[in-house]
Image 1 (tube, rainbow, N blue to C red):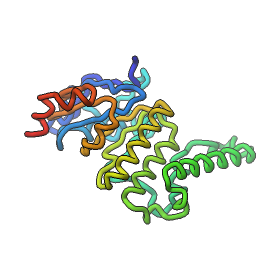
Image 2 (cartoon, rainbow, N blue to C red):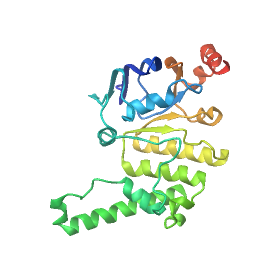
Image 3 (cartoon, one colour):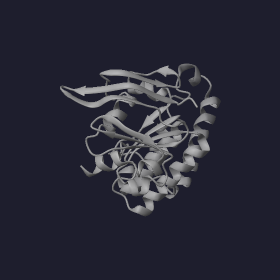
Image 4 (tube, rainbow, N blue to C red):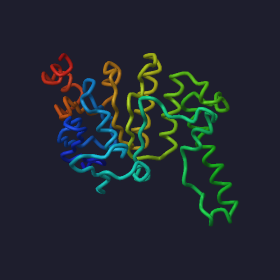
Length: 250
């Protein structure tokens, strides 16, 4: 099966340090892929290169059979790739609903569209209905008028997931989606990710240190160690891989 994303000999250096060292990998399309590795193994740098937030030093990145190596973040987003960060990036002074509405951009914003108010009125109505439906699904509908600033850490993580749903993307890069939240909500978030993946055939590439939870939902795992790809396999085989175990014990 052709993968949506293909990394070929990807390298990223910072001075004399090879943060990503000749990594070639192909996440499983339409599945939940877990990117593992101890601190400093190169996981976030790899995600930054895929999403265009850092330029690569070598190698190639292909997405849906098109080269996206070193393209700027906004172009990569329009190709269908969205990412989140360890620290969520919300518009704190906008409401919960407004944060979802701004995630759906680029629709009926041109000069020609402005000449046909019925067209953009209906489009705006559809977008709002979709946002409200997503908030209800995430259990945030009652908070739609609250400022994002007032949300709890767990609610912020859910709202970030809502922005992903609004974007209609093909590939989602998540950087620690359950960091700092309680296990009950952490499982809820991963169950929601699983539902999205299955229903929309979206590919997920997820960095997460809480492996006791994340491995229960992952379909495929890739392990980095010192910037190199150490192993890639199904979760059950990764858990019994001696090299992977040693890399976490060092």
